[in-house]
Length: 491
Image 1: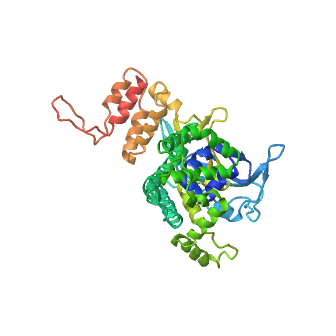
Image 2: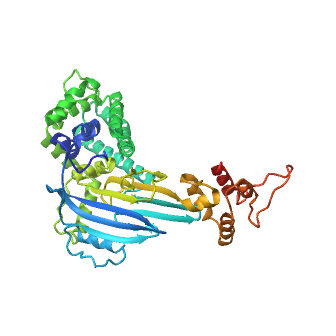
Image 3: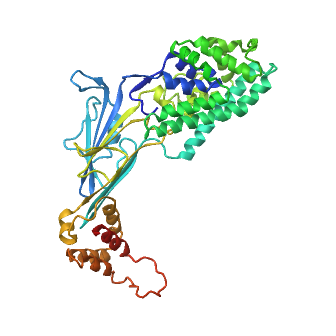
């Protein structure tokens, strides 16, 4: 899912299954068939390259943005025109550039440079932070940033469930209009209202979880397709034996066969055995044009469509060229929210983040490139206003020991990695007076047999010294953590 690069084109039969309401009678189609039938093609898209490098207490940041439409024979991108309003919004978050940037022309590459401490600019969309902690024994650094998306899991889940309810209610209303006289309508109504409503929510959850896990595990999205396919088999949406025919129908763009399959599924839910003919009342489901007309007639009378019409009327002054909404769009809105289907409807922006470091990171979710001495993240980004996906998250921490100082006062490079990171955090938790006392103590240490004894004896002036074995238990003193950390490292 999120591993797909560039624009994604869907075969006509699958596009049809998403565009028109009949897909909703069978959640097997959008989930299982889309997983089989995706084809990658190149299309123009916005590229964001974020280059980071520690600079003392700050983080130097260079943002390169451009719009690419493929590459030339020499490997250089074909530059398109980048939105100048977006360029101006980015420039506002950076110090004045010298020479000044020309933002009136959107073509080519555009670079923005600045140094930031603590908070990072929301230039691509999102939020981030950096931190540098320096001590006599070494330094530690932290970087974390989210790009776009929404980290409100409760809100995302609520919106997806609401979309599932909206889709179900539309289908209930549509089926009532067409089939209320049929003997099996009560069974179909119960199926839609209870089972299908639940299954749509599970479809959304499987889709979302598969996309999320595939960030960290190759082929995870395929696993979730299979798992939901099994879920549908158990609930008789289709059988394992039907998969070869289903595969042929999709790759052959055989829309009539797919429509007949959905028609039979509806009949089955009305209590009609597979050995008996499909009721004549379901004939409208076998013809795409007739089915579209039927749904549009129903949808045009819904509150959802009237709300869209009112919004269009309200926006006419701002968007005079906007066309009035089609009735079928009420279904499309819910589908898009349910499955966060933006990857198929447009071309996602692309993000590359490069963090240059003097040492390999202690912790990171990026890819360490030893030769270039940098951590790299690479991902596609949804639209800045998209709130249906979790953000792209990047983080790294690193620690660089002060080798000369540690060797001179501890006899070796004792603190590295996580230990040095924790030590830096502890040091920067001290007030100025205690920090001065501790630094003076370290500067006076000398390698040798008495080193660990001196560490064990250290206390801050206001720190109580516990003696004797009959004393009640006391919480650890302020100096306990660094003394134990250094003693363990020296051993």
